[in-house]
Amino acid sequence: MAMIVSGAFAVAGMIHLLPLRGLAGDDALTALYGVEVRDATTRVLLRHRALQLGLLGALLLCAAWRVELRPAAWLGGVVSAGGFLAMVGRPGAMGPRVARVWWADVVALAALAVAVCEGGGR
Picture 1 (tube, rainbow, N blue to C red):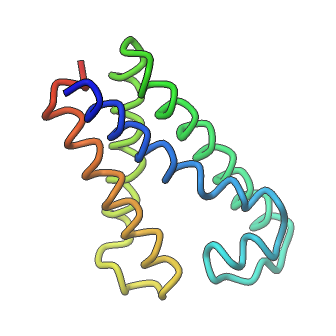
Picture 2 (cartoon, helix red, strand yellow):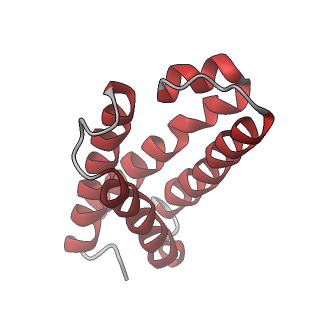
């Protein structure tokens, strides 16, 4: 059971680390989200999103091995993934690259559900 919980947190953490590549610049942001970055404001907001998700991903990965971090990591992961799913609605609503993010968040949310069902959310 402990390995399942650790694995679930690790999966959710790795998914949340994926946007970190957006810190590399406009080309990386376009590859991630399918949007052309045309102004500095959008660039900063998308790069900040990448940074925030990277921090959450690091917390989720740490929670795979540090039990005391699990409640905060679980809550952050559920709010992040669940919030995105709710905002987008259905997977095809905003284009194929956003649909890819949507499905990744479904996997992250499922992993976190497994973690809490196996007793890892305490």
